[in-house]
Image (cartoon, rainbow, N blue to C red; front, side, top):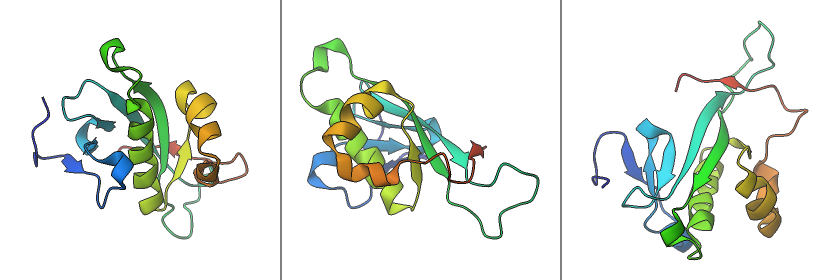
Length: 133
């Protein structure tokens, strides 16, 4: 069970109503339900041109959303969408782009939420690199 206010764990700041109860676990690279059973796993990538020269200004990180999991016993309650809502709100609030590696996000969530496609990292954008964040 997740502990409130522990190191590396934060509630999503100013959450929209649909993200209420979703916990951001920065240390684990995931958003999860308070019991930790349903989660969205992500990894941060650094923006940049992929070359040897550093960008002129620090580029915001890119959030690669790699996996969404909801246990069978909790499916059908909209938890996967709420996890995605929280992750996309987090990315938008920090000026980040998103890579929807998870098939649920790319095939189901984004088609149902087309306004969020503006946050998706495009191939012409500077190439992201794995981050140690």
